[in-house]
Length: 245
Image (cartoon, rainbow, N blue to C red; front, side, top):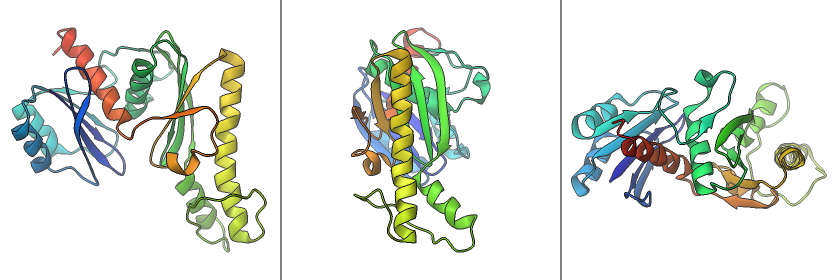
């Protein structure tokens, strides 16, 4: 059994995987507790674990994993089943690396554009040869709504919802159209540019806002919410099989 932990900026997730990387059980909370991990370890024979942290460290969970499993702390020095072609690899988010691993191992014979629609809109490109080439980062849906309200005197704070119009007939509708249709146009424009340069590519959409955008994005496969956990599992299995831990 393999246990993967993803400590994000707003959510912390744990995933228990079998030897063939099938998800058995997962937990998602604002903050994981040691008891959450202890419950998993008591129910299952977990030998190896990996933890990725992009938010504040969860020292209690780390300490428990160190005591009760063979822990692989995920870092920029961790050996990977893909190659990173990035000018400043030490600045690359660990979640982006795990997502790229998940994208390539899920679609090993295809060029993949993985789109994470969460707090930020992150697009990452991995070639069919397993080379991470980089991508783009821009504000996500909620951040765009909040910025319009925060940096102006009179624009209201608008919450995301499903819309079916492009022309806004009120200030609120204009904000909704600008943010929701704008981010969809940004994604579809990027997809077109990638296809012009690389030909056929697999589009993968993940993240907390994927359901808000799914009707607007073309030719997309929707990855499960545990996609980064799956990527971490593949990194862990890769290092276990290579005898590195």
